[in-house]
Length: 96
Image 1 (cartoon, rainbow, N blue to C red):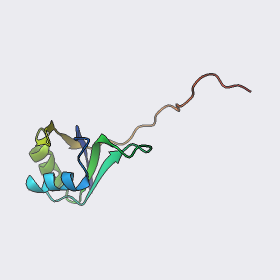
Image 2: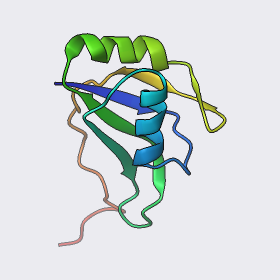
Image 3: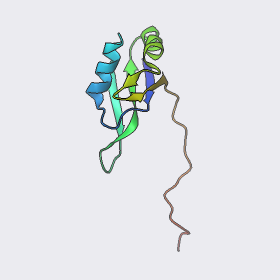
Image 4: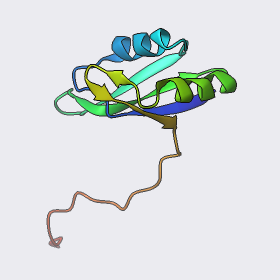
């Protein structure tokens, strides 16, 4: 199973739009996830697709990278593992 990163998604795009985009380019995807803001529910402009066949995933990158979806040029490449981030969220020094 290959996971592909899909960037520069239109904020109005949903999972069905992304799935149809890949299908229109000759690629069948197994799952689509459009990342959303946890508080507002608005799309964040990127997502992921999973494709069961590694060769089909590479064809998907070739076929879909740089193509237009709803007026935006998509970035499609193999997803990289998430890296650990420094703990954030602090708004100043801690009081004890």
